Length: 435
Ligand code: UGA
Image: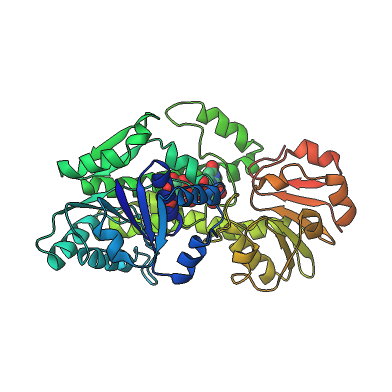
């Protein structure tokens, strides 16, 4: 199959590289010449484990290339994937579809022969209809179908998720398009990935429903964690106790500082807007959005309380800034609210993140960046684990104790257990546990 991937961001780049690895000929297109130049030189615009090797390998094999010109890539393609950004629109929180529609217009001008246009970007219900209208209007004689094929990969585990998906969702009623999509994903049949062929609108909504459900699951366990702290229960054991019930499932029940990232915050908000616009408000998701926002801010207060009620003039050391480990992505990271809350209360903030500091610098003012966890803890009145990078899972607490002013550990990801940390002479505060 010949594939054109429009947009070389997270989803576009990972999907493009994986499709090439399946043996397809893939051309990744991006308007940003600096990004394309970097990719051509083998430099990745994002940190994602395994991506540089995968890209390098497939470029060498001649199956993957990077260009800024959309037209030639589309003209020779059997399938054109739209994987451009759909950020939250300023003001109303609805998904900004201007990049998707601009791509559709450009694709229309270049299409030749039967072509399947696939929306891979997360797009609200009805976007596929509009993409079809745009292409049809601009190229009335074009032979094409528009398919929704949402992506469910996670940052930090993107390649594995793409190659071993729980399911593939294909939204179209066009039999020829189903045949092309089956060919595109054929290598995954070997992994027995179930393929769900459904209506286009259903596929579009499935993506939002999945993300909103997962965000709800996290928010639910976060509220249970708060209750655990009040009643002397342990949230990790509650999570295990409910997660062993197959109807609930074990995953996405880790209590923490609130979900962040480029997807859950944006997609929950967009779903809320879609639901309101269609007179079917999703009050559960509205509440999830509000509770999660408040939670991120509340984490700074938790630190302040652990420091005896005031952090004025104190130094707080943060371990981890990215919204999750194994990424350099800072979008909607809880650390942003935590740093702001601590600085508003008069604290000095030191921070260390294995990959995220370059992305963090333009977003955070007056933060001192450290070289590692121990450098970060130097002279600190409290140490806060904000992101559960592996580098923070086996810290030397004797060494930390010797460099800190006060041995206080706030473990917002429950990486450690209280009894072990207290043995090192630390005051310990996790999430959803008092024992
Ligand atoms: C999420 C979904 O998991 C993917 O399936 C989806 O494809 C993606 O959004 C997307 O729409 O593009 P991602 O945002 O990369 O993936 O990362 P997750 O691993 O889902 O984590 C999201 C946030 O939830 C992080 O802040 C994480 O720390 C938090 N989280 C996750 C918890 O607090 N507890 C959990 O149990 C799981």
